[in-house]
Image (cartoon, rainbow, N blue to C red):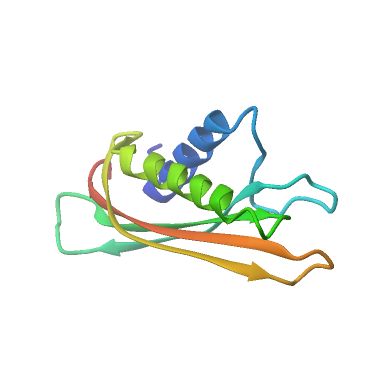
Length: 137
């Protein structure tokens, strides 16, 4: 059974981020980490796929993946920015996953204060849209 392109992209990103940050910080997916988790950390958030039905012989479309980075020191904007830059670099370098070909189509980045906890946080958000150039059906 062929792996779905959306899952293929998500898994590749998760594995590469965990490899990159193995000794520096934790990378989470599915659920936000529990209270008391050390900062900074990365969370693979929303992930969606839009099929493009314009081609009968090849699977085409886009996959959009959002990444959240939180830091508990609002004065560490440079640290959050550097983490986001590394994530972007990983995304741009990712051109093949499980028989699928990709390119980054669009990137949106923001860094903003987060006061949803008792501790002031800094929240970086990166949303990357990958164009599926072809692959398995």
